[in-house]
Image (cartoon, rainbow, N blue to C red; front, side, top):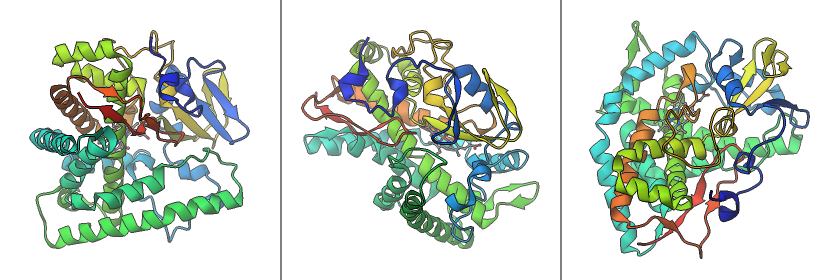
Length: 401
Ligand code: HEM
């Protein structure tokens, strides 16, 4: 077994990678005011019961922790919406973001991957995140939405401001911490909303063959999406469409570096690529944490959670629960089945999963073609994203082979 913790100097806050947890599967943390769910069956239950475990997390956040409603609205932010409104919005956006729309992207994903690798090879160095794992998904999602992919440095600034934070997740934070947080996030949020609102307005005037146009035109039962909802859904796509997939690509290469036997096996039999991608999502779960709130008192594992509590579902820990996965600390693409929770479960199951899987599979296949070996550079160490709720690398230099 490869000890990835020492090998890559993985921070303590990514506790799920540091071996089996002792302690209960569901636990209240008085320091942060949050309930934490670490076990697989318990996480499975929470995600399957949206009536008890609501996605509307803003409901229980003290008002003084939130920005003013003039500055910020989550209207149409699909991950925060409960039934019945969720089903209506999901149907509407699914009608624009179909499996066919995704499947048609395959040749473009392959061409882009080739171009990005060629450009890096000319520079005679290959830092996987900067050279491929970041630009590939961001260009794909920008082209799909219909916003200029040349603006991607801007998208990165916004995404970093919103996600690359190392603050502890807590309801009990000081006034100074809260105000610093709000200042750091509201500016980029407003800029991003204004940017996408301008593009959406332009599509209403002059439709094009892109996803933003399909979103402004989509209709279910004769109803269209209000502008604010189009913008907020486009924000979800732009952010979710690249951050997580960037992590997936980096993490997959890291898994194959740590488990060279699995690298040899998939190199020899490319039909194993989909299983490698699924196991990478289980083993290094990009979106480590989801939030829910209790609408009523709930019994979960050995705990009783009162109503109106914030519940943190640690997908990354659940994906390493030995009650569900044998030898969870081993990267084993041969697991069959592999019912990981990396894309969530139930009504909010990741809408972009087919795209993420396609990007992961196409990029890995081409990387295996282009490099005789995928190996990290011992002289130039891998660096993990500090954010406690994300599992991914922000720097992954490879030895060219
Ligand atoms: C939802 C993970 C890629 C769009 C989710 C959820 C997870 C997740 C865990 C569930 C959220 C919840 O239950 O609260 C991932 C991972 C990805 C990935 C690990 C890559 C490896 C993508 C991509 C897109 C996308 C590429 C779009 C282009 C969405 C959307 C939702 C979602 C729109 C909300 C669905 C809903 O609330 O009904 N994703 N995602 N994701 N994801 Fe992804």
